[in-house]
Every structure is written in C-alpha cells, then in structure tokens.
Image (tube, rainbow, N blue to C red; front, side, top):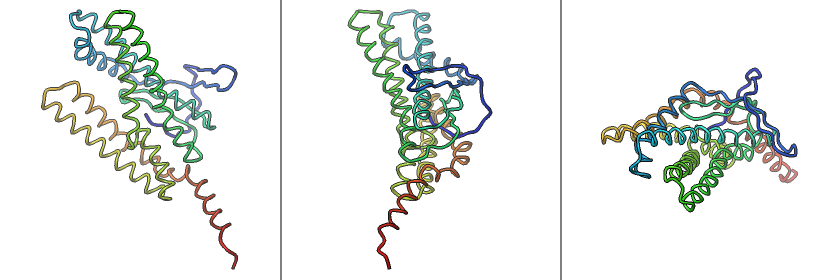
Length: 278
C-alpha cells in the first residue's frame, strides 16, 4: 500500500527481478510475515464460501476450496506486484529499495530516503496502483479467453476474481488518505498548492483516521446484519489503517517537508529574482 523510509542493515536477497537490456535492475528482499498465512486462509474461505458457489453452482466443496486457495495466492501475488511497482519506480527516480514487508494488512516497500520532489513522490505513490491496474487488464484478457473457449467456469471465475482483487487494490489505494498511496500523493500535491507541507500532512492524516474508524463502523454494521465476510475484512482494514497511523505516521510526519523543500526554495529564488531593484 504505502512506501516508508528506513535505513536498516543490508538484507539477504530473496527474490530478484532483472529488466532486459540493463535498463533497470532490481534485487530486493521480500519479508512475509506469519500473518500472511492467515490472509491466505481468510481469502480462501471468502472465495470458497461466498464467491465461487455463486459463480459456478453445483460443484463440490473440494473444488471450491481448491479454487479459493488459488485466488488467495493471486491476492498475495497481487500485493507483491503492487510493492514491486513501488520498488521499480523508486529505483528509477534514484531511491534504493531496502525490502518489501508483507503481512495480513498488506505490503510496505521501505526505501533509504524520501523522494526529492513532489513529482517523484506522486510517481512513487501511484506506481503501486498502476501495477495492479495492469495485472487486472491481463487477468481480464485471460478471463475473456477462458469464457470464449468454453473452459471450466471455476477457472473463468478464478481469473475474474484476480481482476476484482486488483481493481479493488487499485481503487482503495487511490483514496486520498494516509497510509494509502493516494494519501501520499495528495500530501505531496497539497504541500505544493498550500505551500505548507505540515498542513498537507495533517489533512491526509485526518482523512486516514476518519477512514480507519469508518471501516470499523462498517464492520460493526455488517456483523449486526450477519455478513461475516464483510465484517471481518472491514475490521481488518480499519484496524490496519489505525495501527499504521499510530506507528508510522508520527515517525514520517517530521520528514514531510523534505520532498517539497527543493521546489519551495526554487519558487522563493524566482520571486527574489523578479523583485525590482530598490
């Protein structure tokens, strides 16, 4: 979801991605948390219990569970690709990605420093959603091909679930609230427009906190209406946002001026240059 700044010790390389022609070389450690197993189990249960029986009725429990596990694996893969998108763009703008952390609540790509300009901050923030949008397009093509070929409806439903997963990740992360990618992009843009990075950060913080508590409220309402899947997912999202705001935002708030300082200094210099001589 979000990108953070940290300066840890070098990590062993678990996975590597190398672009052809030497245009971009990326080698970054991926650190999955044990809670990823819970994410896979919860996702598989959601798909096997509520999604696939409606998409392909009349199949056995084993078929639904197996396809649910495949879809859950697609969710984890989509989260990794989201963070790889951040890492690739981060490398492109001159940052060093340290590692990718994955957990039940999503992923975080850690870099050695903040982006140097608001434009770089926006590019870095939006890289993840763009990566998921591309995955959704590819999965959508696969779904259409499977349907046209008369393939197993469960296979087509699994491809469709990857489309929905990636569109969901894209849309949620575009919400202009920290710690989501849209919040980081909005903070950079508002910092330039308002010329007050601290106020821009406070606005994105406030929207993030409101989002967290709103999702908790949705979880309560869904639980009261008997919709267990929505209740669990909404509660997880709400508490994940709230926990991130409590732990990460206070650490990064003090650095919110850094990406905007070079632009503000250039603007000040231009105003001085235009000032008529006394």
